[in-house]
Length: 399
Image (cartoon, rainbow, N blue to C red; front, side, top):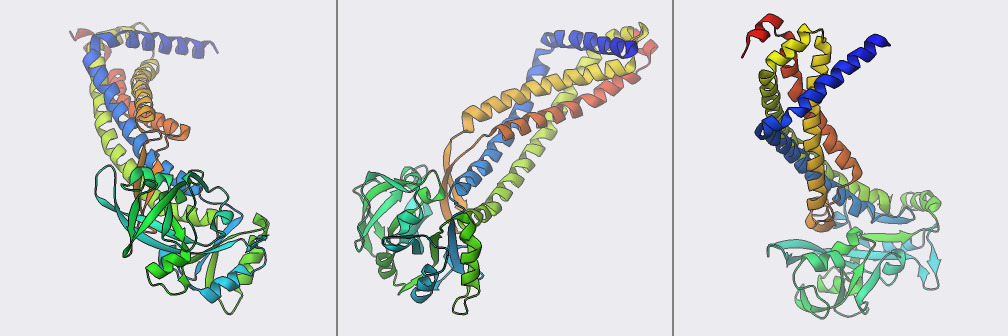
């Protein structure tokens, strides 16, 4: 134990002296900290986009709600169901029922071009036609301003996210749908889910406006319980009159988020990696400067009996401390600048806009700080090895 304790004392002493010398190298130290902070802030900021996008879709799903699409369809946009098929689906076992019948809603889905508030450029905003039971299928949906649209009329309600992100979606205003003007009667929320990026209306009125006949694209059904899903699915997939795929709503939206989150995560890591290379060179420059300035000091310590391993570890710890300081700064900046920042982006599964908020989670902050630690270790290893390998006699002669 004594040799280990002595070695730890050596590491502590050398590290303390090294940290005390940092004020003499303010420029290089500040450049290193800011470089690492920039890497962490960018990494966390970009990954918070993926986290926010994934969160808004995850919040949209419920395990006791099922969605039925045409077999082979990976989104509502490319699906199609007849009225007769939707009736068969509504009568399937496992669906919850109320006084008005099955809690199922045959729905239609179209896209409107509306200008963004931030840029004024047009974007694809999803518009959904729902049936009378559409809100009962989704109990989290609430009209928080104005009123619900009336069935059979050219009226719509707008999700809160869409209303805040796109122009002209205030209660009482008119929007162009197909060849007519439709009244906005209310604003609704959906527990922060993807429905808040949509505009809702009566499915049958929307059918007439877009000349869709008596066809739909999906059926949303509330089940008696999550355990009834397999019974419901088996009844539909084994029915010879149907050619459909059945998913839990939670699984459907989780799948919808995969493409976008994978793309954002890949780009974020790529950008941060390129920046990290620059930060590593900054750390190398700082630590080589520190070693050069302390060459005689290090040689003297070695002559006095301080081990090479203790010097190596202490210099690595100095580099790690600088990088971690930068990591903490970057994490704080990312938290303050990006968390809950609202934006909208394209969902490549449906080619429509999804409004979401950036989410800087504790996991992302930890990941950013870990990146800073790796940068510090990479930036400190080579200067530390140089300090340990330099001959004592040569180092003592250096001015």
